[in-house]
Image (cartoon, one colour):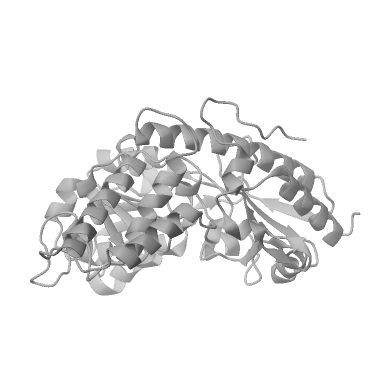
Amino acid sequence: MINEQPTTPGERSVDEIRAHFPALNRIHNGFPVAYFDGPGGTQVPRGVVAAMTDYLFNHNANSHWAYPTSSETDAIIAGARAALADFLNAAPSEIAFGQNMTSLTFHLARALGRDFKAGDELIVTELDHHANVDTWRSLEKERNVRIRVVPVDIESGTLEFGELENLLNAKTRLVAIGAASNAIGTVSDVARACALARANGTMSFVDAVHFAAHESIDVQAIGCDFLACSAYKFYGPHIGILYGRQEMLERIDFPKLKPAPDNAPERAETGTQSHESIAGAAAAVDFLASLAAGETRRARLENAYAAVHARKMKLFTTLWNELGETRGVRLYGPPPAARRTPTLAFTIDGMPAQKVAEALAARGLFASHGDFYAMTVVEKYGLAPAGLVRAGLACYTNFEEIARLIEAVRQLAGTT
């Protein structure tokens, strides 16, 4: 049995955390539902929904007009930029919002592409979600650039960084790399990748969508030019966030309407935003910050991430070790001793991933299956089109749920 009690001052217990999530009261087929689908989207605490409802009921308006609800909307958006700036260790003027990470990345790619010429090179990886691959590949057709690819070592589940160094040259305009694999949990050394790019005079873009749910992000320490994430992966609503260095946001020729604002960061946004989702994203940041003590919101966030991630990794280690010893179960990605997220990718011999997920769901264990848009790494494992089963741990995951998952997988594998 794992000790799930707080170990640092101000840290919330898992029971206190779970009390914020009404979804955890759901019953399916007589079983309490355990949500292992967090890598595809986490459940949402009451405070996030309350912030969105309050906005829609009491402040709903368009922005930049001279009446109270519009001014209130402006203030809510400004407050959200400040919250996400603390979340990423950036400045509020470096935070832009959009429908999702994919839309924001396509928009950024199109904007940067206006300055690219035929023969320029962009580097992507085999490990990434295709939102950080095909968005840049679109410039092959639009700007006739060349896409170079960093391979993944399929045995270790990690990127071959030596090849990244080999690919960088005078024609390289951008390195696009994921901070963590949403399919197999690998955490990549993005600070190293960005440093290599910077030394080569090359821009860097980091996909932190999966990473943002598990470790605190510091864009200053990473040294990236751009970073994107999505609030619905860290207990917020469906909205994307783009960090861009101030000078980059001010310089880039973003496609925009002539009357639209031309100041950073609004010049990187398109149309009327989902103001209620922006309010919800800020509330998600504040929820995370409430899970630990600290003198500033940034400090509380860092402490909360450290405490919650440590607890999740204890649970994950138990899950990995128990299923790793189960006959007929195959695990993918780095082991718990490596730096990784608590996201388990596995298959059961002779049982398609969808059938496994359906059987788990019948027991109240909600896990996802497929390639999760990280289709290249799944193909390299020889698992297309069926894909993997993925069980992700979130801040509300407890030991009882881990034990249920272990027992269910063992039953499906025919070992109990």
